[in-house]
Length: 316
Ligand SMILES: Cc1cc2nc3c(=O)[nH]c(=O)nc-3n(C[C@H](O)[C@H](O)[C@H](O)COP(=O)(O)OP(=O)(O)OC[C@H]3O[C@@H](n4cnc5c(N)ncnc54)[C@H](O)[C@@H]3O)c2cc1C
Image 1 (cartoon, rainbow, N blue to C red):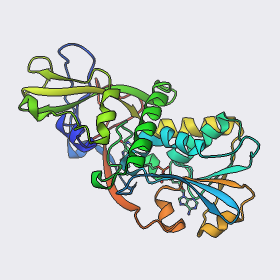
Image 2 (image 1 turned 120 degrees about the horizontal axis):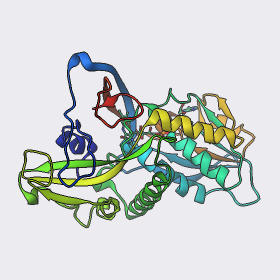
Image 3 (image 1 turned 90 degrees about the horizontal axis):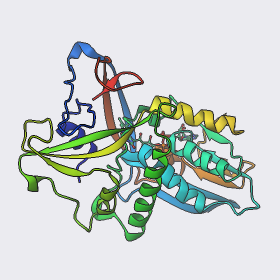
Image 4 (image 1 turned 180 degrees about the horizontal axis):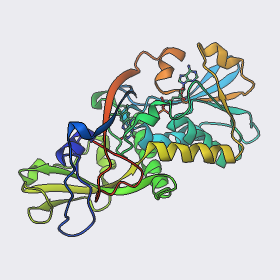
């Protein structure tokens, strides 16, 4: 399985295409004086993967939902679904979400859709969150170290990925800043492009991608013999997070700006059920030393004519 960097990098990360048999691609103008912005963020990575589980805390239940590494945008709806399924009994409406990044917002929205009215408590809201700094490609990569994956985690990962993939499809369009695009990875020989082996969790994810195929020379626009093309979605964080916050607020949501310094402070909240969606913040708040910040950087270029990027500048 290729990393997101390899997938984008191998296609130079510089091309956007229309779906024709022999696709013509516009060349992106990359030059230092076309750079308009550089952002750096820290991905909340855990070698054994994200945490979705329940814990008791001073008479309350905390349901953790954090540690999504380089795929929090990708997985958010899926792990939110897993977390909410662990959650409230039908008669217990008093729940809250801690964290207003993509994971907290998806969790709060699913709770609203099930008839609950959770406030969100958070130190920062978009655009001040890590989620706002993401590239936003739908790719469940940089989520775990393969040797650390347990069968239980694998099951959660596959379930979350499938659910999230379906959910994003229903959000495609300008309103949420979600759109389909082709991803290419290039190889000089056909066996250079291998499907994930059966023992890899990605072997169950790969079939999700539509029109996933290896194209021969003449069927793709690159100067190498083979290109694997598959389609995925790009979720533009600025548009998407704004839309999610709007949905949450118009459905009766309430955001309380507040920082928690230790988990005992959560015990003082009026809600009995708390969804912990604090991303990297869970390291200090819940003493999870496995959480490791992984640096990521994006560089934005001036918008360019003929590139299909509707909502602003192009990142590479
Ligand atoms: C450069 C870069 C590129 C990326 N590209 C992609 C990509 O293409 N696709 C993809 O799927 N993912 C990508 N990611 C990963 C993605 O951004 C993260 O996995 C995701 O943002 C994690 O979301 P979150 O809601 O868990 O955390 P956050 O967005 O960090 O939100 C955490 C929330 O918890 C709050 N909080 C934390 N601690 C406390 C506390 N003590 N008290 C109160 N509130 C607290 C914060 O204020 C915030 O509101 C990228 C990340 C980076 C840095």
